[in-house]
Structure formats: structure tokens, C-alpha cells
Image (cartoon, rainbow, N blue to C red; front, side, top):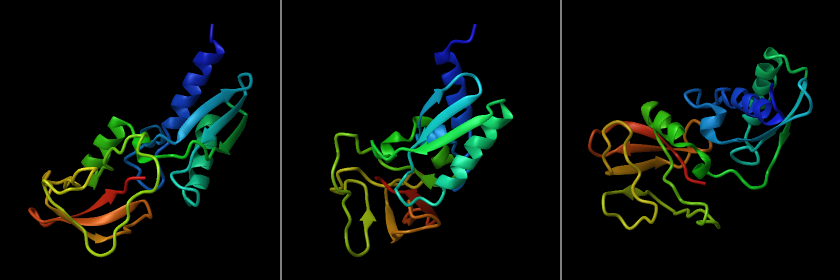
Length: 180
């Protein structure tokens, strides 16, 4: 017998299996944006989705992909609702998601901890991250060679949630998923 909890867990697994439209190496589960799934019988579902930031252009694509996957699995009525609180944080990215980012060549965000609420530090001018630097979140490590000797080239990369950095040891450029 399928219980409501078992059904919701399966539907959440399906919704979470959708690839992120901006970083297809990650699923929505890896990214931590699928907050909840509420089954209303066996043919109606409400999915709570938290965008990585309020103006994230990928939310519509995520919603449509969730709807498509759930329709393919027999759910007739799918509602994807944006939930803005609690706000998404890069701390919501799973350990598996962090591993996949690094494997994909993107430096994962440093863990800030939910207790580190408040504004994200923003500096002016070039930023160099070196081993033993006074940054409270630790250095941004190169996903290619693991070096802590990196520098910021641009605060924005292919998406607003990533910065462009370069390793000072292997000289390779790489994206860094910024901490939020």
C-alpha cells in the first residue's frame, strides 16, 4: 500500500531529479531548491520551489521541467509554487552537488553556515585568495588542481550566481559559485 508520505517522497525524488537549466551537471535536489511536495490524492501535486535569488531567470524553466517530469509519471495536475522564505542559500547545496560542481570544473561555494545570516561581504577592487588569507570563509580552491592560490577576474561569469576566477598555480580560469 502506498502511503501519502511514500507518494510525496517519490514525487519529490522525481521533481528533484530535474537537471538545473543553467548548470545541467546538477539536479534540483543537488541545488537544494525543491523545498516540499504535497500530494493532493494521486493525480494532483503542489511543488514548493525556492529560487536561488528572487530574479532568477531559470525558475520558469525549472517549473516547466518539474511539471513535464511529473506529467510523464501520471500526475495530471501539477502546481509549482515559488516560496521565498526561508531564502535559498548556497549552504542548501548538497555534498553531492558540491562534488558535482567541482567535477564539472566549477569551484563550489564555501560553506557559510545558516548561522552566518546577514549581508554577504562585497569588496571593491581585485581580490586574491591565497592560502592562509584572513578570509573567514577560507580560500576559493581551484577545481582543477586544488590550489588555494586564486584571483578574482570578474564578479560575474556566465550566470549572476557565479564569478570568474583564475588559478595562480595552474593558470586555468574557472567559475566559482558565489556564496549567498
